Image (cartoon, rainbow, N blue to C red; front, side, top):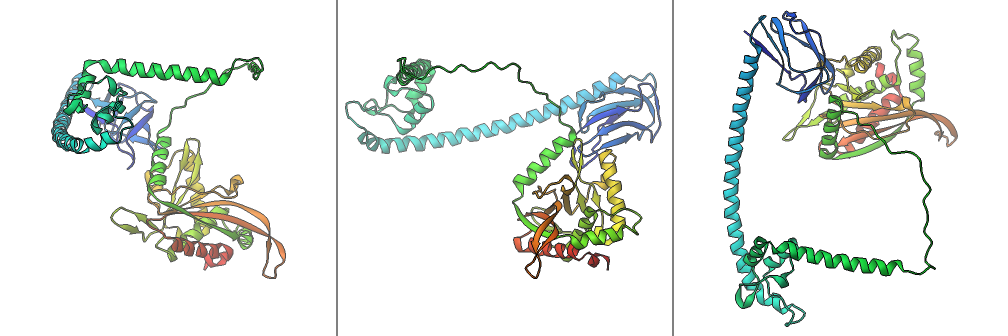
Amino acid sequence: MAEIIRMPLMSDTMTEGVVVQWHKNIGDQVKAGDLLAEIETDKATMELESYQEGHLLHIGAQPGETVAVNSIIAVLGDKGEDVQKVLDQEAKEVKEKSAETEEAKVEEKSNETEEEKAEEKSTETKEEKTEEKSTKVTESSSASSSDRIKASPLAKKMATENNIDLSVVTGTGDEGRIIKRDVLTFLDSGSAAASSSSANSSSANSSSTNSSSASGGGNDAQQDFVLPQVVGEESFKDVKNSQMRKTIARRLSESKFGAPHFYLKMTICMDNAIAARKKMNEFSPVKISFNDMVIKAAAMALRLHSDVNASWMGDVIRYNNHINIGMAVAVNEGLMVPVVKFADNKSLSHIAAETKSLAGKARERKLDMAEMTGNTFSISNLGMMDIDDFTAIINPPDACIMAVGKIEKTPSFNDDDEVVAKNLMRVTLSCDHRVVDGAVGARFLKTFKSFLEEPIRMMV
C-alpha cells in the first residue's frame, strides 16, 4: 500500500522547508533508513531518512522548491501502484477540511455581523439623541444666521469623511436640519461624486492660481538651471530569502520589539589574559582563543549570578540550573548560534576544541538540532573584525547577550597616576529588563571582568 512522505517538522520554529537535493529517483527501491533527500530548514540543512520501504513512485517537490510543513513531498509504494488515486484522495480530504474551516469562518463572521448590527443600532440611537440635544449649541456657534447650515454633528462628520458639500444636501429634520439619513440618501443618489469633483476642481484652480502668482512672469526671475545629462540606468538584484534569513528576521524582530532591552557597557584590561593565553597555548593540545576565555569567564560568572542565567516565560521566569553558552557564528546566509553545553564545567582546552568543531560545522551547515538548542546565555564577538564595540539583540529564550569588541592597546592611568599602555577590551551586555535589572546585570559584569583580569581564577 502506498505511503505518503510529508515535509517533516525538523525544528521547533520551522513552518516550511526547501528541498535541496533528492538522493533517490522515481522508480528506485527505498529501504528503511535510506537517505531520501536533503531539506533546508530555518536553522540548517538536514538529511531526511525514510521510515518506510518500497519504490519511490512520486516526487512532489523539486529541488529549490519551498514546501509547507506536513505537505506531500513524495509517495512510496509497490511498483505499478496507482499513485494518482492516493493523491486524489489526499486532495479530497484537504478540500473537505478546508470547506469545514471556511464554513466555520462564515458562521463566526455571521455572528460577528449580528453583534455589529446590534451595536450599530444602539450607537445610532445614542447619536441621534445627542444630535437633538446639541442642535441649539451647534447652531448658536455658527458665524452668521443667514449662512448657517443646520446639520447634526454626525451628519457633518459623515460629510467631511465623504468630501460632501452640505449646502447641496436637502435636510429632512426639524426646520430643514440635515441629519444622518439625509447624507446617506445623498450618497445613494450618486450626487456625492459630482459634489466631490466640484470641490476638487475648485481646489485645483485655486492651487493653479497660487502657483502662477508665486512663480512670477518677469525676465528678472531666476534663470532656469539645466541639469547635466547622466549616462546610465538604475538597476538592482532581488535575491530570494533563505529559510534561515526569514527565521532570523522573524525571531530578532520579536526579540527587539517584544523584550525591553537595556545595555550595560564595561571596559576590561586584558593584559593578564594575553599573558595567560600565551603560556597556556604552550601546553594546550588545542589552541585557546580569547573567545574561548570569554565563554569560560561568562559561564563561571553565570554560576555565581544565576539570576542572569534565566528566561522570560510569560507567567514565570525560568532560572536555569545548567549553563549553556550560545556562540554566534557568521555564515553566508546569516548567523548561526551553536551551543557549548555545560560550559562552566569544562576546561579551556575542552571549550577550545568544541568551539572550533561547532564553528566549522556551522559554516558547512552540518549542525544537528541538539547542537543549536538549549542556550541559556549568548555571546557575539566581533573583535576579530576590528570592531571597537557594539550592541547585540537578545537571542531568545535568553535574558541576556554579550557583545564583545576588539582588544586595543590604549594609553591609560595606572594606580600611581602614570600613563601606561594597556590592552583594553569593551563589552556590552544587552539585558531583557523583564528578567534582569540594572544592578543585577552590573554585578554579573563585575564578576565576569574579574575572571578575565585575573585568569588564574578560571583554572582553580
